Image (cartoon, rainbow, N blue to C red):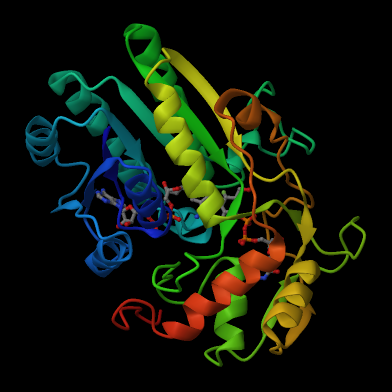
Length: 343
Ligand code: NAD
Ligand code: UFG
């Protein structure tokens, strides 16, 4: 199959590109490099020995997207293109709504015009909101999000579901990711945050490499076994394999499917720090600080539906995630070409 990855040069897109190529699919990437670098795709080509059709384009630019889709005629679109920083979305809600919703509408319109009927969407566990206790399963009603980023995901799910009602030939797979971490085992591609990382693993690796003095653990007084929050961390290579399965599943399926991509196994912030230190034999200085607003104490997946429907199950464990994250950081202390800008 030929797959168009909108936002495909980013963290999840680059690993998914590699996994799709390794599975024998053709890959077309469209990205405006707002939060990524074409270097990631060059490395994917080198790793796999296979070419990617790469386009610098904005997924809100109808003409550019139409031209690419009309030329490439993909069998399926994976929609990764979006802004994803929770804190930034609180400060710049309009930018988040404009970009994230607009990319979704533009892709759907261009799919309609060019006859593409399959779309896989990067959603998030955040749409379960505060109301749904872990483990989250796909039957639960969506909840209230704690920030504009989360609301864009919730709204985009609705838009995609409405589009599928209006066009019964459409297949929509909403993948709800839990916490993707880790990197390709080669250490050649990985997460490349710009500025100060918002997420736990890139912060840990930057402390370990000496770029930051210490980690602040956000809250040590939650009602959890060690007082820190529990999350469902999933290896990026497992997540990438989940996309390959979803794309292949979409071929013989119509309508909407919501599917969690998680492991079903929660770990605490201190589990992460301790495993990282042990596996990599390196110290990560930390202190317990105040809670971060909007954090839920416990979030993890019921991962049963993905196994049943896609035959997919996460295979890598927390030690693999910690080792692979560190290999990427150690080999690339400044990410791709030292591109990060300190904010
Ligand atoms: P990322 O920032 O590395 O990748 C997103 C890519 O989209 C970037 O390459 C960026 O340049 C591109 N992009 C953004 N706006 C664009 C536009 N208008 N036109 C073209 N390209 C555009 O992030 P990621 O971690 O790879 O996440 C991919 C998707 O998965 C995002 O939609 C994100 O919200 C979602 N998601 C991520 C996580 C996570 O923890 N990483 C969790 C849940 C959901
Ligand atoms: N944490 C720290 N210190 C840090 C960073 C994070 O203690 O410097 C803690 C957080 O408080 C949380 C855990 O580490 O308990 C994980 O935090 P992340 O920011 O890595 O991930 P979140 O679970 O907050 O958010 C992730 C994605 C969002 C998505 C959300 C859905 O980043 O995009 O999951 O649950 F919306």
